[in-house]
Image (cartoon, rainbow, N blue to C red; front, side, top):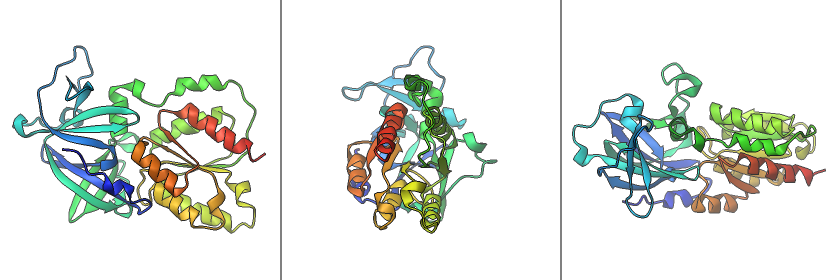
Length: 305
């Protein structure tokens, strides 16, 4: 079953579609923007000496796809009825994976305002498995950090830090950057990359709502806004306010609309590229492409000298 992606094209609404599914009776969710297809469970070919969370591989069509046993990864019970289990086929960060789950419940449309960051003690601290907890129609849905799951299983799929060696030694760059990202792990990698590139004035915000409040404060200082924020880098998926809604608000503001905005997200695909362009993003990059992001920000700040 292909997932209807029409909800993705309604840009800047601060809403998202969550595909709800269960594992061992527990309710979880994934942003439908990451989902390509839902398929019935089928036998897979095991991979020798692979990560224990890898169930194997299968080839539904022309592409060989790795299957992640999500119950095993989460430490939950295996299914008693494989014949009714489901594969959620995903695509994000330029990679496709199949996640083996027990049941798909359906798709719910939820405002980012109804998503909260999980309690760090309950959900494993800053390196936990949950990016957010959604409250919808009387139930709590744990939104899993699929990027973290994939990076743990296959470290080579993570941020391409080694490529930053191509930057070499660089002088300090005093252009002020605003960076908006809710993931502690990913944001530290990006911050380290920007600092390696010479950027010394970086303000970090955890979500679009915090960034919007910060921008309002900067507007009130009576200084040209580009002296305070020469470029903004933002994720899309964030609790409280997503990146697309933040961009929409900025482009409706006479002072903020001229700030260059770069989207840096695992969700970059053909549809969301169109959404970002429609909203006015200056550039868009997928999360493994850290070097390309920095080189693009270099061009933007150089043009302001």
